[in-house]
Amino acid sequence: MKTPVSVLRLPRGPEPNSRGFDPNSPRYIALCPTTIPASQGNKADSVNLEEEQQLRSELRECFLRSLIAMTDKQVQFNLYEKVQVQAKFGASDIDVLNFQVSDLQTPLGVQKEALLRCQDMISYSFHL
Amino acid sequence: IGVSNRVDSEWTKTPAALLCLIHSYQMAMRQTPLTCSGHTRPVVDLAFSGITPYGYFLISACKDGKPMLRQGDTGDWIGTFLGHKGAVWGATLNKEATKAATAAADFSAKVWDAVTGDEVLTLAHKHIVKCVNFTQDSNCLLTGGNDKVLRIYDLSKPEAEPQEISGHTSAIKKALWCNDDQQILSAAEDKTIRLWDRNTGEAVKTLSFEASVSSMEYIPDGEILVITYGRTIAFYKAHTLDPIKTIDAPASIHSASLHPDKDFFVAGGDDFKLYKYDYSTKEEMESYKGHFGPVHCVRFSPDGELYASGSEDGTLRLWQTAVGKTYGLWKCVLPGEFERRFA
Image 1 (cartoon, rainbow over the protein chains, first blue to last red):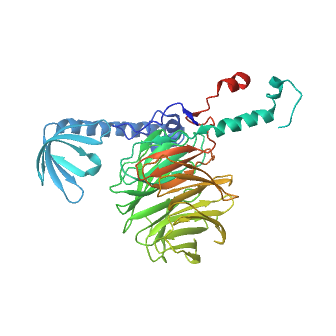
Image 2: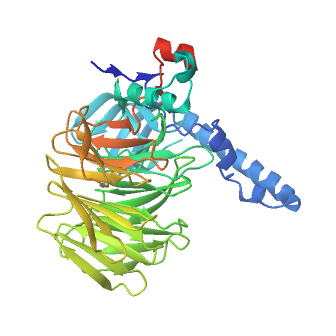
Image 3: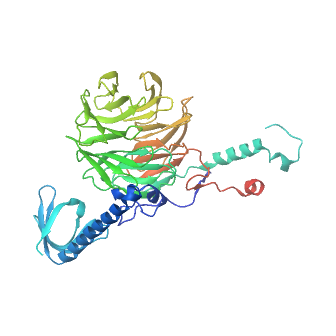
């Protein structure tokens, strides 16, 4: 009767709410190319770097504020396959992977509560 | 091991005795496959990267449309490449595991940053894409699929039209760079394998089979091509497509892989088992149960210490080449006497 080989633990499975690629892993920190082109240059580009970072922060803040402004408003979503739906926007998850919406009007009826996958959206619009 | 006059405790410290004990210990151990869960549909393709300063990595293609990256020696999930809108039929990593490529039923092939998980490029096709393969410098991507055309994309000029190679009369299942990326090997439903010159786009040689080829693996070191069809695992010289040897398995085989040292190969298919064969003698050495569905793909890791299998049951399993050895998550737990003397 053979003894089974011992195992330290089982392989770790996927996290339920994240797509992974931990930005704190040694590999990520070492290899991840910075998204800011100016920072790949030499010291003379540090002025450009600062300016670019400033602009990027402003854009990011603008986007986050737009999400706040959208809360509880009717939003029109343009999805793939020429599908358009309307719903009341609730919140976004931290990675902007899903939007929580209420009273989603679909061709099949009204869904009281739903999660819309951001990857399914082409665009969305709402009145301020 | 010869008879010795020496005192028993001294004899057992000799290297020969040690090897003998390790061997008999390993023979007494039963393979414990490591199951990697996470996919929700059949796993149809898998590929390893080369060995990088951060170890080696494994990518799996799944009909659930969400290919996953894992640490190669442990099977630990690193991330999921999100973006495809259909079953992913093929997946590959470049040697450095910095880029990934996938082929899907949504008529696209995608290139990904394998460090951040971000989608870098979408290459639209006119039909289901089945396979993808990087050149050694990761600058070009080869794709093949149901529109029967091989395409070569220059990744530094993704907007440019790909070079197209036509000839196959049915859907292409697998396409690989070979001979220092100067030639291309492709297998299709038309029951042929064709060797193409990359520059002229002409077919250099064609092999015909009785059945459709189910898988292909190219071993650059030694220029060996491993193919499977029906119950057969066949080895060919990659340059000339001259046959080397064939082995028949007990069941229909979907995939096979040759160990880097070319001493054994593994195969899996319809009967859910993994088979291990001696490459020189062609003898079946072991068979392992574990999967709950047909095995679709199997590959040795770049260091040869383990092999990974993907199955219809939605799991990947990692198997030890030397059963009982301490490696990755497997631990050699020594029996008491052995530990007392040698640990």
